[in-house]
Length: 385
Image 1 (spheres, rainbow, N blue to C red):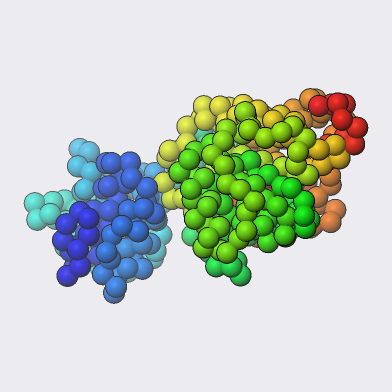
Image 2 (spheres, rainbow, N blue to C red; image 1 turned 135 degrees about the horizontal axis):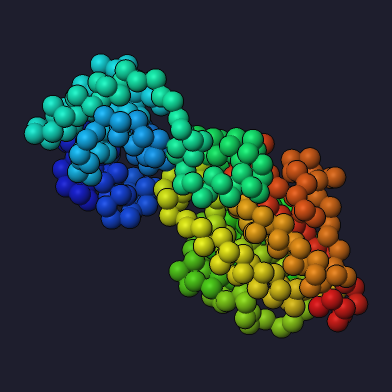
């Protein structure tokens, strides 16, 4: 029998998964960290991982299935066991006898009759969903926001795609990085000998990719622990960085117009990476989008002050909201009318046009969602700056 930070691990995979989901729900722990810290039984590690991520993603839909047969709200552990059973029945297509019996066995003895009764009724139901937000298992505000920004069809398809596990992509240097992020690093277009700033570099995926161009890459992040991660990942990937700095990009400690290219891979709502972050959909709040858009605009403004005349500013975010994509481009057009937006989709068909930049949605290539815009600063200093 294996052990975990929470104590002895049960032989029943459903019981193990329920304990881990309890930590995500009760303690606000991150699902990926909970799984990483648990010593899972080898035989059931795949199933436990699937249950933890799947139930965390789909809990709203699962609760809808369960609550039609529950008069009094169960305690958290019992609810998570019911979610595990319902997930197997309706989303893993596990045979009913196995899903019900194994989940009942995982329940505390006093709750087994209740869990058995509810799951048998859940097994017999053919789901009819009152809303797309419940069917897809996302907060109402998130679905409504993306419907307004992308159109209902594209939004629903994107959200459905992010209910599937995202594939891991490993670069030649061993770094695990989503393809869409790798494509952003390519679009920066760093050239040998150029001075390039990655303004929001943590944990270092794009900075280490840029270093492969033989450019002199300076990586900055305002959180010291993330700057430390950049330095550690540079060592792991044998990437030569010109420097790693803990600094606020809104008040950068660099000389003005001292970089050939500045990448602003800005902090964002992360609504394009929900396929990789199972619990993120429940953590992001509606007000976060506007607050982050304000920060993004400040970072881009600072970036234009750091790039030389004729240099490039590249803005990217792993989200899909208009406030964090098209609206930022509108702000650049207003504040820097002489800056030239460089077309992306004409030379790179992996992207779709979005404002004056480019967007990739999860359903396009089974990647994260990503927005990128590329601007050339005026060749004459002072205009539009």
